[in-house]
Image 1 (cartoon, rainbow, N blue to C red):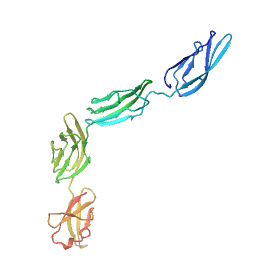
Image 2 (image 1 turned 120 degrees about the vertical axis):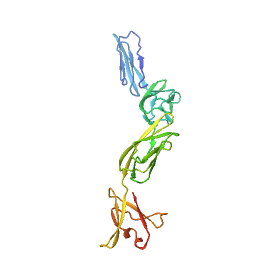
Image 3 (image 1 turned 135 degrees about the vertical axis):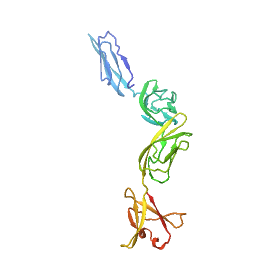
Image 4 (image 1 turned 90 degrees about the horizontal axis):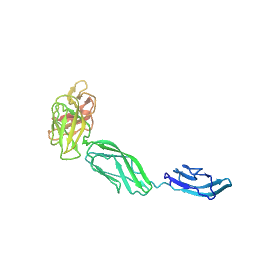
Length: 307
């Protein structure tokens, strides 16, 4: 069999003093003094080998048909990488070509075990790390091995999106979620005006100062903690001014903001419900162009919604 040690002894009558063999498969050689053909064949093949034994009277030859079978050592076919999260159930099956009677794995992280009969690695990992395991499958012909890179990620919070906008003087609310419950929450780096509820995981309040802040959010269950960053940008709220342009004989709507971007304009007649105008505004616009009813309404109120 390929990759298995092989030994064959040429025997002869009449006291041979030397031996030889031609057409040997790769990996085998003949000892000319003992007549032993030995080695480890490397390729599956069938060869007709001419073996001979010689003494002072002459040589005798014979044909030896040698068949080298393909290896029956297990060859592992399962994936070489796997990923799991701390605290989450994990299952990985070692698979191999050729019949396997025993499986093994070395370097398993805490919380995982191997069933040597089925080749199933399972359990719940407790520590974040990347580990290179050696997994193996064994039968009567030998053992096949392979490396498995197992990445155990830390617990992740659900922060989506990871960057949000707020406005000075405007109510703000943001909630984090956790893959395991119950949990205790924490937040550091909150800008002025915002507070955090450690029970619900909600950031809320009314920011008072513009700027960009990186907030560190965390959640902890009985044994583990996950952290993630949230980038909060606090801008000045957009300001809307409506003026009458006597030269053009139109009412102009002007939006003052820190940058030029689209804004939605909403109107109301009763302050109970607001309706968005279909045209978005950047900078200055004629009010009657975006709201044809503007000049016909004695009491119509507008507000700007930043996109």
